[in-house]
Image: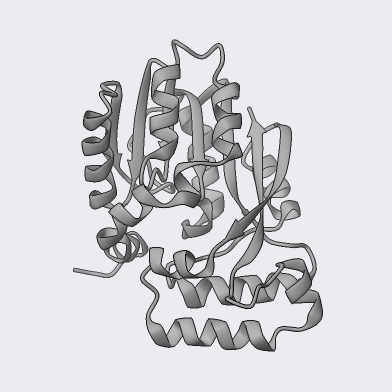
Length: 252
């Protein structure tokens, strides 16, 4: 079998579905609370959870909309979503295996589209955003939630390096300026953006991706050698814990 980008990502994440289901960072947060508020008035909506991972968007959205399609490239993630949905009696959640860049849905299929902590894994961000625009109904609600890289080149380079050492499927955390430009090019109108700071416990961060010990050691060595600007921006702690910037983009 040819190792395509999608098959690489699916293989890479196959053993990790339970880790993402139980992840404190993924299963809660003010961004999910905001999403619940945004879904007020969408009781009859069909929602796409794009790059669903452990399914936390789907579980929050399910009681507030008519139906949810949880879409991911990794079969074990989808299996976990279906089991968890059944355990929680969320009967309106279905699953679909696909990449963001090539989805099997007809044009204008969804009233709401949400993607959370997924875009930084897409092999082709712009193609994925074009697909998102295609499958979302005109005037539909789109919510993009992800880590945002700082604008200064020094901070951006350090973040991408640490992320890639931690997880070889990482593509890029985009700057706010890159997000704004890409969403506009794909045909989205940005209605609002909420910036947040996300503290991460280092041990949990590398355990969730099962980062090999030699790569963990490389990350720690880089952190210890980081210049003052990097340490201060990311609030690096003695145990390696640090803080990231995130954003929630609301668009239509």
